[in-house]
Image (cartoon, rainbow over all chains, first blue to last red; front, side, top):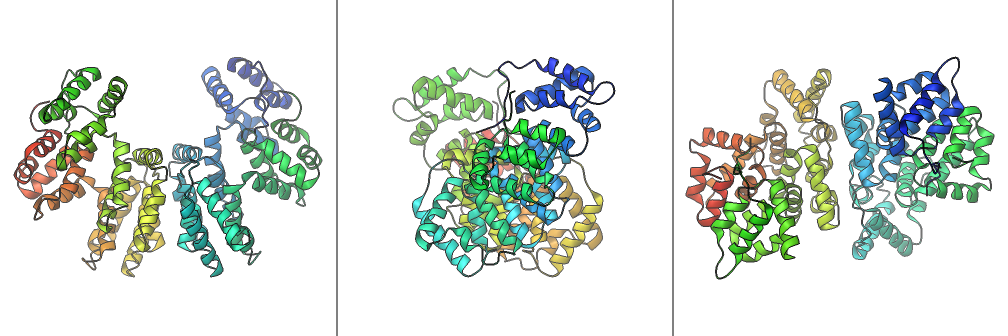
Length: 316
Length: 316
């Protein structure tokens, strides 16, 4: 469930644009007004606002936001205003330019979006970067990381609920064999994780747990410092229980010495319209503190206000 | 250029359906009428005919064709009547159930369709087989064939004309190094062939030819009997000059002792609406016989008539 709150009566895109233009005008920017509008419009409405803004003023709303705002507040507003597919393309592209930790972002986009939304991100990548998403990911990665990430971002998984139980059993056995041999980069293991539908994978991992006594991720903890193994565990988590993955990502981002705004912003903007309600519940359960309180303690100013609005604080 | 001939004034889908129903009625089937209609309608028109047929008679046109027709004529009419994306899904699925020669069909679909048409085939595969295309290809293949084919079918290549000449030079060098080391299954070589846009790949292979004295496919002929190497050469041909690939496929199918109708039908139905005119010209140049004459010599009856109609013989 989403946390985004849209008012019951939404102003026309033309009115929203006029208000935004006012927020940019004169000395200083009216950040409150920007939040009041953009943090309470869904993706389709934001798209219309951008189109209307371009048609009315001959200017790109994103460019105006970029020049009016700064720091973490700028990033959260820009990422939020982007169309989800464009935003995913942007996040992956940014990740291909950063250090290895960014492999997680690539995996996250590949595994937590619906198959068609991942494809839309690949289309948006073409339009924006004049290259394919997978060629940049392949270029950015090497070794086992590449072996896993390139098929993950190229996948177009089947989305139905149908499950082949025979196959689930035989593939659970195969996974267990490979893991017992510590063949974590085995092509069969990667094939299963990167091509199967989420329903089928779930059945396979349940079989694994039933027959071999441990959840697969426990068996993949042989060396807790191995970066490839932790990416593998995160992949499985994203494919089978994304809300738990995002809860942990938020928890680590907030509890870090010096908040990790890069991760905090990313998770809030990409999930507010999807499953942020579940993530908030998981967070509260796991940390004994509501997410909004944790965010309020760790952040401040307009950045804080924007994040809280997106996770459903206050009224639209 | 296509060879399909559509009459200047096309009957309504309802009229076409009525005629088809007549062709099936009574003793014997009116094959001539079936050819006269279906072989002269484009994909959008055939789709409308199928929809109208289902709405009018509550029956599936494909099932009726299947039960009325037989042998090679049946196959060519059925494959032709399918929507191109469904047809590609069908051809790949069929290939995953056959022997290794069918790896070529999988590669052909992956490399000669536009990136978006390949994606549409993947969507059609979901709808028809309740699985993803890439999982069946991965399941069907092993070793080097899998390493090449899975990324080929999963690719969504960039389609623009932009070329990075620096990259073309450095990747030509990289390809030459790998080929000199006989590392034909090297992951860098596969990365380049499976992720780059066709324009970029073309530039890279031109650089290869300019700097190292041979077209890449000549250097990939080290062992003419190696099946993986010949698939690799065919992949490069499909990506850079598909009409030459199809010309050769037709030539081999026709010149074989006992025509290879499986290949002949496939090439004619999949290219009649795309580039069959170029393929015909290539064929004539290379074999000194026009393709229609070669087909007329090797085939007969309604099968022959249907193939000739699709390659533009006679009037619509």
